[in-house]
Picture 1 (tube, one colour):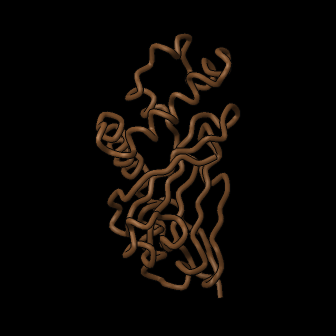
Picture 2: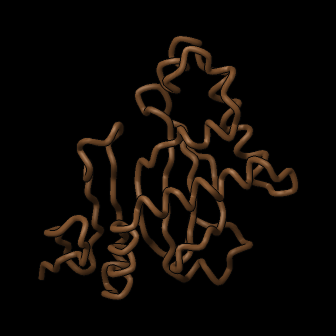
Picture 3: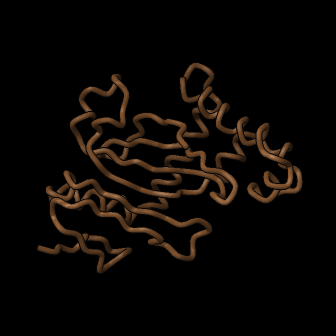
Length: 181
């Protein structure tokens, strides 16, 4: 039986309980294709689907919250995310050719950008929801069995396949980040 995703921002989205929701190019006017994914286990629970719809409807707020968290991490040498973020940005600054870097970051002098400024250039590529199983490290034993949200951020994917992934709990509180490709 087909059900409606209770989204006010994207009315008319449908899903079948027990099946993954996978919507590509949900926002076609975005600079990069945007994806929305909800795991089959989440679609079996209407309250969990409602939380995923709420996150979808409040994407802009979540993006701002995630960027604020990343800005905090980039300045906190004691947090493990500090090194991860610096490595992510350094990878792009050191490994990419200058012309691609200029195009990707939208500036003629990418070397003058601070890491804080680079955080603000990250674009949301996808928003997903699933159970924490398999996604979170051993420090998140409780969250492994609960609904989480996953936000993939990147620069222009024409130039990079590298992602900063932000994980949030069901209440949209930051859990951890990872660097993936």
